[in-house]
Image 1 (cartoon, chains in turn yellow, orange):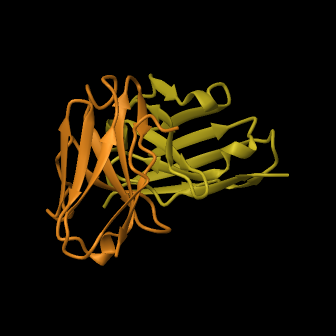
Image 2: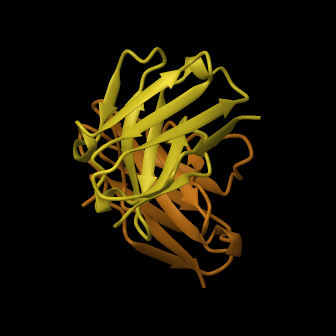
Length: 112
Length: 108
């Protein structure tokens, strides 16, 4: 059974940093592009970043370029999102997605 | 503003057929596959349709997708109360993924 389990969310002050993790199981992780998608409270879905199977290609939505970094460790079946210089508008549930399977999400709240 | 355009709401009565539209451009829907997701209240999105019109195993055949040019549609036939949810279309656009703003489906 495919499982994606996010962790690392929480409350952080504006300008702070967080690192999200996603533990994957039930499939050959190294064979898939992986994504982070977020959903602000009461809002729609917004794609954040993609990473190729071997990590050689990474793409970001304009609003997070230069602040967020997507990475993966295929040996650990894990996906990461390093988030720096966080802003109030980054407050959202962050989902790890394959994207035919999604995790349950982890909430990131940016507030003083 | 979302890159893909969906109506914010739709509704129908049990047993009816409803359709949700998704409008894009040549760089996304016009040249790439369309995906549809269902998000029940308080849960993560679930893939309903991939590659324009394919259903993952376990998705009832009441759900169907179609695409024509730069637009796509999701049709739900035999509407049921448990179909009340938010529905999102998505497509690749160059190296990015773009979503519609979502359609809230109400079963009256």
